[in-house]
Image (cartoon, rainbow, N blue to C red; front, top):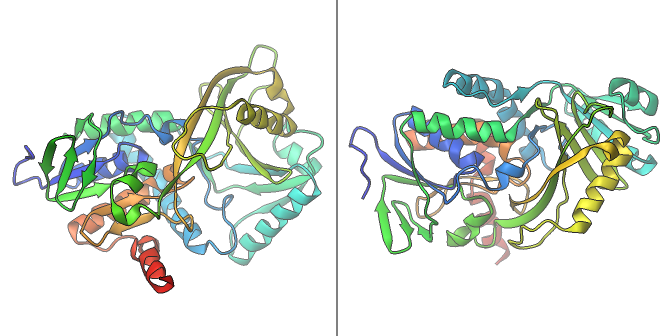
Length: 377
């Protein structure tokens, strides 16, 4: 049974990644008595993320709902970060913007499609030739054919953010239960032989959500991504000032600088089930692509290799809303968990309190794919 008083409605959040922690913190601020279930809060896929908050740079035709949700969350990010700072924890938000580079003509043509699409939506983006690209961000490879400048994108230090959320949630009275969850229902969470009761249950277990609720079994799947962390050595060129995204012969690559001098390099992306080991092929692919984009990286110290399991959905839009039994889903965020944390948390708290969720979050309701499945059945 929950230990929370009647004055603080007991709420369970299953999952302690960036989404679960953000929901837990915002819900505790709203007056709920929150318990987070996770064996290792803050140490899942969110721990090995790049930290890009880039809905425009990641946009693509046909995914307008994803773009609208991402832009809404981006607008909320400065206030979200300020609120965390007010709690005594700085998440390391950066407003330096994003440079997007294309390695060859085919890559640049792909970026041209993106630029035309964003222009048609009235989004700010500048098309750059190779020389302009290198003037905008010194150190980029001389063979890069061209790219884009996206000034409105942000970035955040994912590990500082996770530690900040855990600290802020703890200060607000959130309890952490380091036990693996086996099943959930609208008012219950089962861990092994124990069952705890709550007024509400939020399922935010990322890729593992598919095994905790039958409605998500075929709608959320793990998607593996490997990242590297590097550090400039004495005499080497310092990391880029802003986030650098690139397309290298059709393969995505990103370099995200950190305030402590490290550089996060990612990311591979492929189906591998729940395998989270780092492969030699993945490391080689990342380094080879990154060296074409930013040649100085070849002289950097390789500090860390890691892999995370993103929670992919069928249409790249997350699931935010009630499942048929009343469990509130907050999962399936794919590559955009950090970006979508503020809008997801605000949407869940709105649903818990009977308020209207942010308008762009309505498209992310789980009903959208259930209806599609029923029509095709």
